Image (tube, rainbow, N blue to C red; front, side):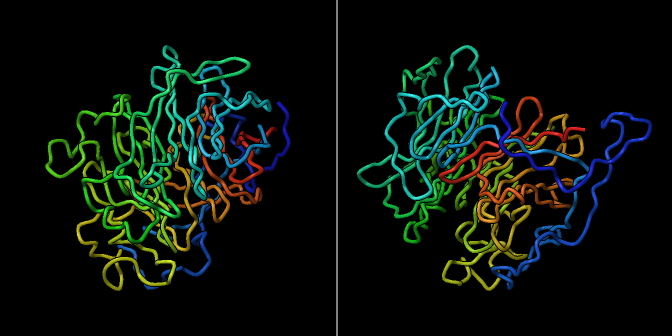
Length: 416
């Protein structure tokens, strides 16, 4: 494997007594004042509880290296680990590739035509839970329709080889109603649960005139849906049988939900949502819950005005909408979410990792219960917009960078 770039973390690994393994003792992180030192975009906003924003900083007692696995990719967005260790990645212009070390396959044939709209296009990719048998994959993308560009989910069979292709391609789900949008927050993150149902995040389309649709339960605007592999509403959804609500809905009230992950050891579904000026959110998702956008937000409109109702629209009285577990102000533009469960970094086990686009770092959050008690910023020295973080089967962390010179990075323990 060619390593094009390597950087050690600032923190040194703690020495354990008698040369015992890292499992024998996990040192407590070094805590300090909040890592965020810049002025808030919305200083008049008041958190609902002390731990909701600007958590204490912490420094990992681990040493790690950053390897560059592959580069020369354009506008990376999604990634899945194939059973043999190779990667399946997407580029927003419509290319899907297989990555084998530093080697990139040709663009996989058979991907439907996508519509590239500013920061959207071909998006996420996930493997069918039964991929080892059926070789089926699912991907999300922006589809051009006469009424407007909207998120769409398709599936197909991956045929491997020197010229990989997709067979039996079919669209299984479309975000509805089709509406015109000049910019487009499409969400597009996907995640399977243990039952084999597929969660899909749907953005608000970034259009102020379309905001009334977000709080309407008969639309797929600003929602999280849960569907079968055929695109039908999955059994057990909270709105099933409710008049005036889409049966595939799981939760509502989102702006641009780009990260989705299950917390290890629980059935808790967590999500990150990109705010406007301030107000990026980490949410614990409850079935049937409403997270308030665009009525409640800790951010500001780009014009500088408050979002929604009242002088402190996200404060103590949230009007029945669920509060975020954590929010960032100023913005970090959270683009993905993962919980660490591996053995390579015992100190990180159970922690949440969030990629930041605008602030160009990898966030590590330590949780106690449903409260954030520490925040660390990693990969700052990379000076890259970060699109996606995922844990590999071997316990390393893979990170996709964003932009026309995209890279696939891998975080591993430092060599001794």
